[in-house]
Length: 94
Image 1 (cartoon, rainbow, N blue to C red):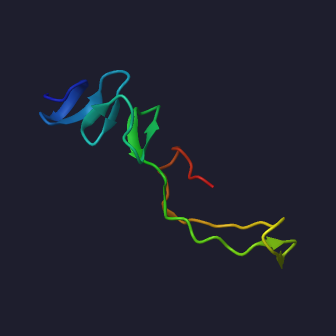
Image 2 (image 1 turned 90 degrees about the horizontal axis):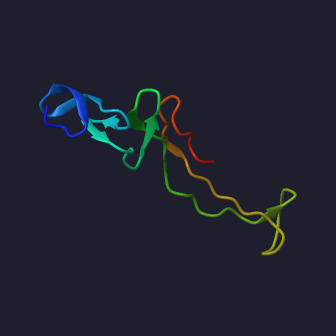
């Protein structure tokens, strides 16, 4: 096996089990998971985390379900979940 920090390989270039303290991700071993991936501690694997889209535009200012001016109201915006996380990973942000 030519993979650094690997205990066992499927082939010379694909690790199936990393050494203790390393996470398996796409046949390689890492100290931490790459951006966009979450660590499954019990399996020591990196899985796809939650992916969210862009923020919407700000909504109109409202207070007590009525449109208000620029003071003392609440404006909201949202974003959609593009990809749900794998089971038991880091949840999506609110």
